[in-house]
Length: 112
Length: 114
Image (cartoon, rainbow over all chains, first blue to last red; front, top):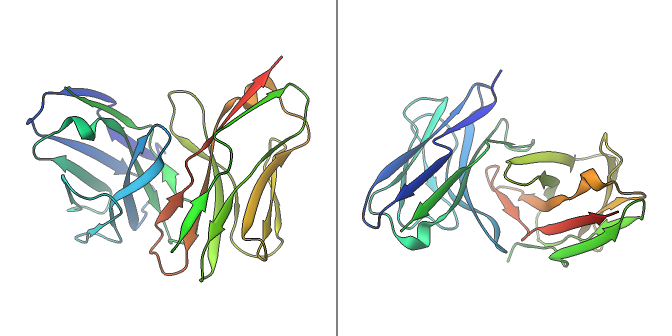
């Protein structure tokens, strides 16, 4: 039982490049989330999904897109990376929503 | 507006001393409350949670937190800290109707010195 797994763990992008972050969970959770963590800012919600085929915007969605084609996977895409997207990205899942969220180990992204 | 405030960004303390990390929230709806801990270069781990029932909740490693509805607080306490408690602690609140979304405080870095 791996829990929530994020790939890759580290990545350096040049401004304007695109990439996809993958989140996979093996707990059969309905709800999945993408957060970003910046120093002194805590974690802020980017997008979330309440089930396969659904997505919704969080607090800071601009510059990101997501897809939930399979229940166990939640993808976060950056179409044209910007230095402001340098951050640590965390994926989380939960079921039902009023219980704890389980977090992945994070992806450290640097955009130069 | 719904918000979560952690009043202290850094808390230095000596080993075996007591510590309190403060968390306040603003809400007009019911809430679920969580404390997460993040060790250096790691993800977030749940420390303890309040969903319902007893307002005093405890973790397996000696931390406790008390939900105070009238003061809209969920402060984290430990009577005697260890070096290994050095980490960043995040208070998180799930507001009723938010579809599981967590609003995080900005975090408190606890530094335990020998």
